[in-house]
Amino acid sequence: MQESSLECFLYHSQLAPGADTTCIAGIIKTARSFNGSAGITGMLVFDGERFFQYVEGPARQLGLLVESISRDERHINFTPMFPQTRIDQRRFAKWSMAYVIVEDTEHLGTISKLEGPGALAKLQELLPLLDVQ
Image (tube, rainbow, N blue to C red; front, side, top):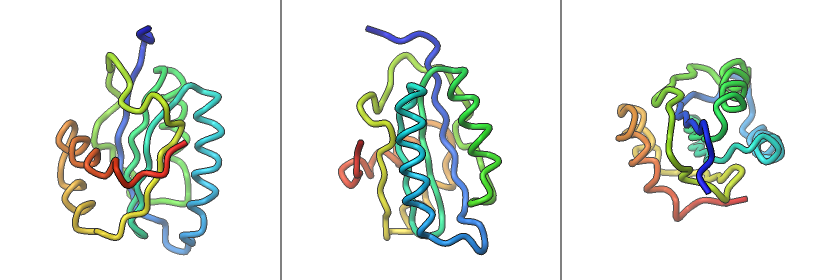
């Protein structure tokens, strides 16, 4: 069954100065709870300095989430890479928020220079490493 009004969004940002990397556990816990109730799925990648997050779901809920993420003080330089865009089907239908910490900062550096589908394709190379829920 195809869902109506699905959209996706991809961004990258940096951990805010003074924010501790231990905040990531709280981010994941909150995201998994909120996303599950809002019908949002996606993935978060962190390399100790940069965040890359792809989310998908109902347009209204996704818009509210993106607004909330953009104001979160635990990160800076919020940079949309794939603006909120209509999609026909989910990429991560079973994951409220998949997550991985990567040590290969060069891989994420490459992704940060890409836009749209190119960035998403490169990010998907990390799928085998994800902790999913």
